[in-house]
Image (cartoon, rainbow, N blue to C red; front, side):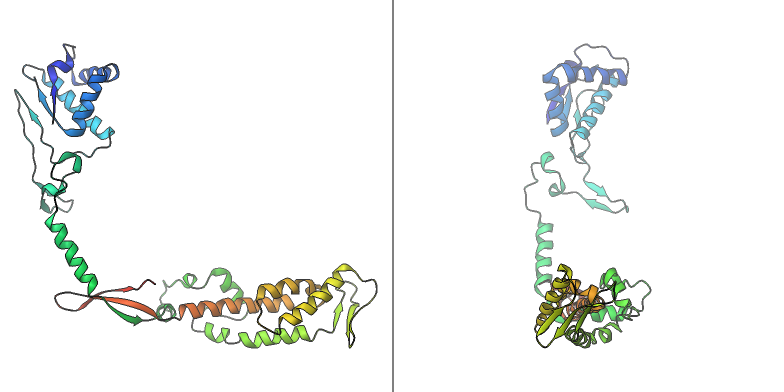
Length: 323
């Protein structure tokens, strides 16, 4: 608690109102480092006004106002349990021991509730916190893990709800691509659409393998022809035609094993001008592969922790178990 001498602080300076007294304190703050340190310490740690006898009331009011503003500027919380004493006339003592919530409920205030810088008891162990911590630990320790529904199962149950958001599961760009393949937009129909993926992959492999000629898209003339001896390039062999022939051979070899849409697309881009339709087929396969992956991920069963009331044993909370 810092003692602040009102008489020494003002030092005979005249002030006829609270506002004038605040101006005097502002000048002292700027000019005198001792005054600045004293007021800062009083604002942080609390204070007692001394030497107040016969001092005008507006000086005392100005000093209290200045310290309150300084406390706010220093970022300190206004202490609800601050003890303020004043010697001389108008002594006051304020030490509330209850706190009322916005809802009107009154709570008892204990030393543990006070801010650390304002109370020497802040480091004491709070029995209420200890009891609450022990209860939470017992509650969590009695969790039972069981198998819960998958994300897909939950989504299928909620799909008829007008507030259900499908884009949380299926990205908007993927939905647009799937709709070009005939999907009507319901999760229930999606597995049936994805089931046609192997047939599309085989059809693409056969389409690539059955290409026997490359045709110029402008002149509509055959620029390369497959023969028993290999590919025969007709007319003036351009770099684009040679690149297309090479890419077609690599693409046919690629499709004999495991392949990705990205690898196939890079090769098909060179062949597409002379054998249209390959990229559209790849686009459909890519969309179905992505949908198949999402269905697999969302279809996995999830572990759910069940928490029960410690007294009755009734389940009161269920939460997914994070891997």
